[in-house]
Image 1 (tube, one colour):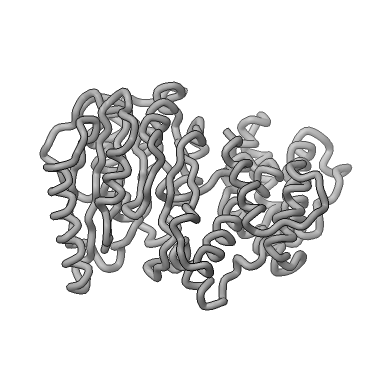
Image 2 (cartoon, one colour):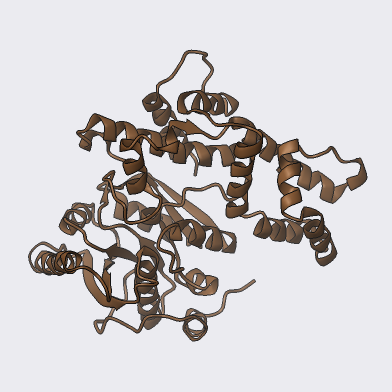
Length: 422
């Protein structure tokens, strides 16, 4: 199905959805292929991120960075002052250090509604502006996200650009690692090891189950084509989890490219800004209330795999002679009115490709996560990180030994697995 022209698609988007007014008067370099959006709120060292980008190998085409310094109308004076300092630091960096291949633009919004102010709205403001700027030059470019406390490998800009130019995907994700060598406090280092292991274990479990949308949903590592952004309805205004919902919304719209030859290094600092995520996970670890000491039982992924395999079989064969779903799946499906959903899907589709597309629009990333939690609470209690992580790697045929592994050793294995999962 051909895509509408970017300008037409963009016009429809801005008419249908509530958007912040245009922010920048400066024009976009027409050679720009990728625009990065960087939310900045109460950041102590935004220049470190800019210097990390500036230290990159020069990409083939100029890149633009939109830094969205944001705050609400009821923000405390400390945050407002920190934001003003960030703006001054960025301005000075632009004047004195900005390389020729980067163009950094500042968007400063300090009048956001307290009800909606947060990282989701900040990303939306920046991504909306990136869409406008690509429309202005008539190029359906890539809108990427990065966070203001991240560092990147020296080939990051180049590799993202290469993936974009080679594939022109609808969606892009980039590889990430927390830099353990930069965490001096042993307890915090263990916290981030277990948190990152938790993230990688879950996605590896989804891959094992052959769920088609098994990818990391890390806000600083995601992006999409400008027209895909507009067609999807844009970024949401969630204060947390905005990345999860956004990526699972845009992923079904086209090809997803994974940039695994370059690395984003998110911060491992503690934070209570949002109810979940890295910062909150670190606080929970220090307070000994973290759930990342344990991982979901691998059997829940086995049951999910069986379920997804049986869906294909049930569509093509007599459902009355199909194997029963695993008990954990049966229990969850009863809570989701699955019989009615199945009937509607069969009634309204005439081919397997269409049925599959609509089925996974229903059985999406959020519903899968709900199932995993249901299985945890009613069938399969969590296992220690070391035991669960080891068992899944055995299922994936990554490990062929029975010796025990530490969480750190398991994390190394899961990192390698993600590196090679293009």
